[in-house]
Length: 437
Image (cartoon, rainbow, N blue to C red; front, side, top):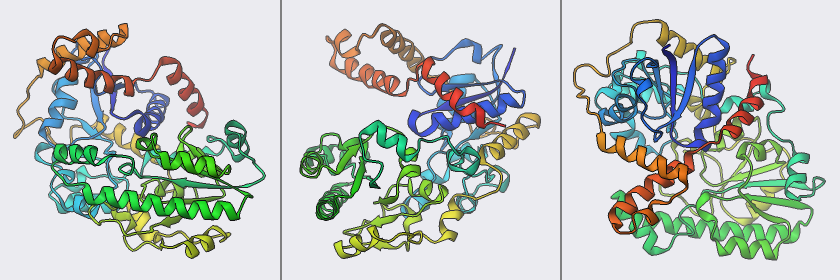
């Protein structure tokens, strides 16, 4: 029996919850749907008797992506819908070639969270039929229809040992480069072909001054609990550890969903994270803390012309403001995140259903595309998954060949990071299902 929809995900934290919401809605409508990771083993059934009618991808930028994400997973298919997870870009990225799709990727259905993205893609050569505006599925969990989905303040405070009677301030950090050494920054710059030295310096200076503000403020306001939602790269930060020891009301926490914290917080501050859209969709406001300017080529375009807090007196005043206005103009943020009265997951499933029922809108695997099956990747993935099942790390198995060990260990790491245990999948489905109506 053939499969109606196959959803491929790349990053678990970014995508999996939303993919499950789509899957449950499609199943409610009577369709069959499965979710697989991009680096899962390639299986014969998806090329033959269980070949999906529609392939739903996580990204789709060029012909090589069509080859890797579609042809190497299910063979030939012209019904390709891209969930298009990277839509919050800098102005340089918006004008560049890569994020505006290349080759036959322009013939795939590239879903857009808002009109601004659709118009950008159309300005770079895409047809309107392939740039439908669906809204952002991950924002649906913050809608009134999902009230109760996230933990409240009392629950979070109890879980992490915070005082629920105190004001709960949340800071969402993006200082990914601040904890990197100069050698690590150089290595990353060489690998990416872009010099990140200046941006790394901006990270460090911004982080230092922001922590100074927190230090002074928390010393003056013991009635406040400040949760610092750290960036994944900040786990080794001595500065965060030092401030935690100095101020008992400063807490560095990475556990839990950032949306849990957004929903629970009494006050929210941010640097340059795209989570500012979640804050808006949750019906809350926030402050953008910018001790020093950010280079425009790295700053998400949604922050253009926003209101920034740039010094400590402004920060103190902001923390005491009971109902601050949102720091980004409504027209700007809603241009990137369409605020339809219909939830995005339903709009997305309407689109998927329409693609399923009708002839392909275009032919991504037609003229201009040459299919190529990657046998090396096919064999490598089977080998790595066998090692992963046995819990044998490649660097130990292939100790006799450093190049092979490093290559296999890198894939092993990606597989491990993206793995979602069946019990966790069931827990997430059970949590989402009551809201799918």
